[in-house]
Image (cartoon, rainbow, N blue to C red; front, side, top):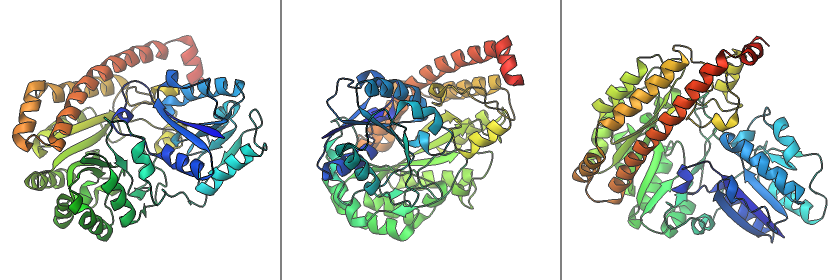
Length: 451
């Protein structure tokens, strides 16, 4: 029997460069059950509605939920069993809306549950069109396969090999929708080392949002992969890389690109640790440069602690810390996160069109500024960051500082993409701003707000 597995995206998306690996876990489990499996990363128009597959699984992110529903409805009319999964269904609020479009909703799933579903389809006990089932891995038994080289064969030639080293995140930030949020499970060092060894090319991305939180495990992994000569990108926290011994171990193991989730300068998050964020990050950047690594800082604009002055603070922080790259986004309160529940309870959610939950739109009322101040401040910050260097100067300084190496070329490519992305975001946000202004004064909008 056959199963198609889809990751849908909209527009130019990071999955064009870094391959999403979770669907390959499902493919591994399906093939172990004797099924033929096909994985596709595409936009809505790329879905094969004429497929011969018996089952179609779709990984649903909030911004692609409407597209997933449209595709699923068309597939069910053709007699296909449709399975939804993904972060859009981590809680309960989105399950009811998805129920008319699918046969199974998996908020989370382990190997036994998934293979059990396939067995029921094969036996004719799970058919399209019946009441949808809800599956949850309440025991948290999901694990990546021990030998997960399967995922490496799925990537296209231009995509960076992506390898997981852990599950979950212990910090439980209210704006995040991480899987196993509040927990942290490490993979076996030898399993990770084996996958790194078989990754094509020299550049590898560790796909964890908070890499290296266990010092002993991190040191062991770096010692294991150092002889492989790979150039590795990670995402971690300020508190983690402030440890000089850890930073040296990362450099020894081949880490050349560090993405630090700063998120905000207006409040201290638990993930920041006890360190002062600004001075801590400046210290990290200086030592990382000495060790031949580049550092990117990621920020979220529009948290309740942020006011109109926060945009200038981020720009000055970027200048002072000498970050090599920066990524900024507007807060997106994904459903069933703590921030969404709080904003909804306070009546501050102003847009529930899921396509707009993409960091390119404002879907809530900020606390310490107006919607216009958030949009104008964000666009002004993005323009200031991108005006700081011309494209040619960006390329020249990147090569002069870090040489012609994979990590410096990735940094240059990332910064040039951010220049392009700033134009797209500006256009979308200005349109969003006009739409919110017109809706705010319409009779239907006023009646909805009174209700």
